[in-house]
Length: 120
Image (cartoon, rainbow, N blue to C red; front, side, top):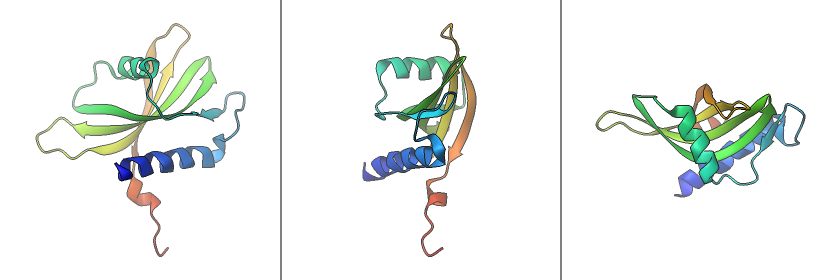
C-alpha cells in the first residue's frame, strides 16, 4: 500500500512539475483529489469499453484539460490477460466530447523505476 501511495504522489508531482500547476485556458489542471468518483469511473469504463487483452484498473485521477470537451488523465494498473502476468502502471489519456462520447488519446507506460536516480 505504501508503494501505491508513493506512486500516486510521484505521478501527481510529475504532472504538476511539467507546468500544469496553474489552470490555463487549454492547459492541464491537476485534480484536487486522486479519488476515482462514480462519474470518473463511468468515463474510464466508457473510454476503455471493448478493449481486450489487457485489464485496466484506475488507481488515481490526475487531472483534466478543457478543450472542445475534456481530456482526462488517469493513473491505472494494467495487467495483460494471461496467467501469471505481472501488473504494471500506465497513464491513460481519454477525451470526452461535448456529447459525452469518450475515446482513448494515449496509453503511456509509467516506469516508476526510471524516476529513481539514486547516485546519479
